[in-house]
Amino acid sequence: MKDYKKYYSINATPQEIYAAITNPLTIQLWTGEPAEMSTEPGSEFSLWDGSIVGKNLEFEEGKKIVQQWYFDGQDEPSIVTIKLHADKHSTSVELRHNNIPDEAYNDIVEGWNDVYFGSIADFYEGI
Image (cartoon, rainbow, N blue to C red; front, side, top):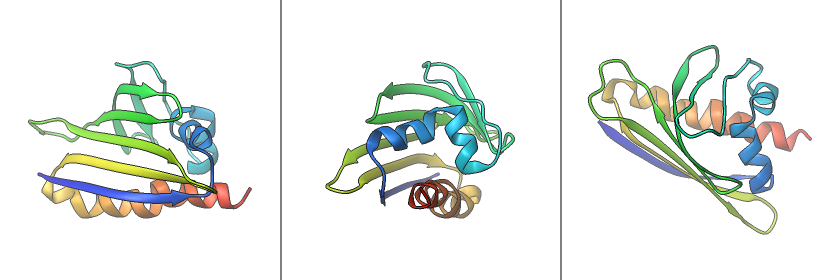
């Protein structure tokens, strides 16, 4: 198992990024795919037509999201924590993803950088 931590700077407010991660309609705008998402702790979510699935654990509006991501056959839960910090003209996004299966690590890191936060950054820069 591996852990991943990275900071991203996105040209949007913490509230806008929070909505981009938690509102199914906003998620669909930047992913191009229908999404199942709720801010109810204990609810399950699905992104990219089921490519990413898991359970929502904790929310602090505009500040923090904690999720469990599901990987087949995994003994320990894979936990994603996203914290949003306002900067002068953007938001600093702190990502921590713990217990990533070794065989999925490179794909997960690439997905975070290029597809997930890369797409959110592109979405807000295009507005």
